[in-house]
Length: 221
Image (tube, rainbow, N blue to C red; front, side, top):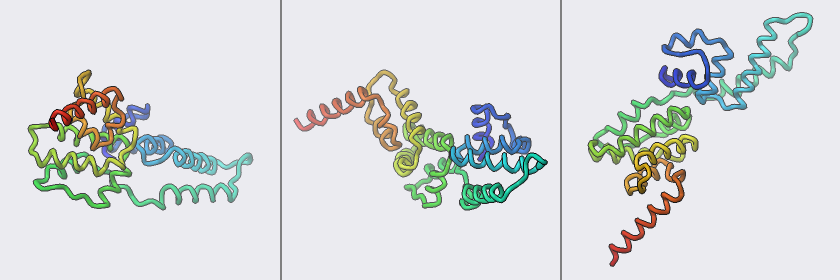
């Protein structure tokens, strides 16, 4: 997952601090399950089921006259671990540098299905980091044309796979660029490519399209 991502998730969710890979070894089982959930490797229903498995296994370790394992306990644990963990392909978490290398290629990008699947399974924070990199490159006039074009094209390709909450945060980031001013064509193009334009303030979009209409009308005249 990367120490940077784990460190931020742990800090945001009041988990024990992570500054190096070895810190994960100090996590108990319960905190490790929580970390996997907050990073996005588990859905909330999966998180609750895995926690239930942990509670059952913990009870089984301390069997006494008041508690004795039954077949249903073992069946629940095996079914959950198979359905939630073992039945899934291992996730190779994409890094921001992977996208950086891709868009800085001297030719137009071409991504394969494995790359797309890895992005789709990436946690929200990693999706946000990747999109912010692509957006910054797309806005940077100092970058070569091919790099800016690749950035916009890649934003388009991953737009449908990006989590809605991530797109909302991207919209806030882009809106900060023009502040209380009007939406310019470049910002609209990049915001549309990453799916953020739908979350712009409506009054901003109305002004943009009115301005665009007036420019097109004057050009026809």
